[in-house]
Length: 282
Ligand code: NDP
Image (cartoon, rainbow, N blue to C red):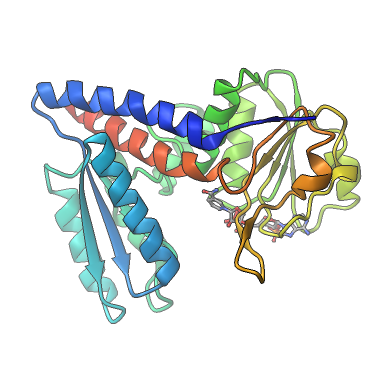
């Protein structure tokens, strides 16, 4: 039977540490500040933004939510980014993606000052991650590394298989595992004999966006199973990319959905905002 990696508990612990550091920084005259920009009325995005705002308040981080109408032009959005880039109260800027289709996600992300790009999505920050000289790590992969670290799992020398190669999760996750000295394989929709590859893994990170896709027969006895997926089932319940029922009896450690990787993503955003404020002080 697997040990459950409790993302809620680990996240609460990390947030307590962040709150203490925020308090220390405030004593030195700096309050870390995060601006979250949301364009349009997407209900899921609104929930995410609300959660981010609440998490900031709980840890003492100043937060501003900039809500713009769906009709916002790219020029208007870029002007807002310029204003936030120049705002001394704001150390981190996050643009909630996806943007409405008439806006160019890439152009908007690239306009954020890399020192305030707390999602670490810009080309400069992605390049720094490749070089291993980063200030910020993308929140979800960084959250996964923190979960492993807090659970006493060292990826060094282990076979790590990542299913998914997106710019937000799969690719940066692979790079972080490599920095942690794992032997890394990245799988995607064209991978042949996926189960044969995943069965080699000491650590599997599932980030493909397909409900319950990774089943018990695809994992090795004793593997660590990290489920990044968030999928909504027809009955409204959330589930991951791993079939928990069949994977759990074979895994040594496993993250549940919800309550695994999810809570860590916002926590890492808070950590990046704190780091941005600390860097400014230096
Ligand atoms: P994307 O859709 O951008 O990428 C999915 C990746 O999975 C692609 O690389 C795709 O391959 C690969 N893939 C799809 N189907 C298969 C298959 N049958 N076999 C092997 N590989 C496959 O997703 P994201 O990376 O953005 O997100 C992945 C999951 O993680 C989603 O469920 C998302 O909701 C969740 N997520 C959770 C977060 C959290 O905070 N916990 C944060 C971000 C995402 P190809 O490139 O060939 O198309």
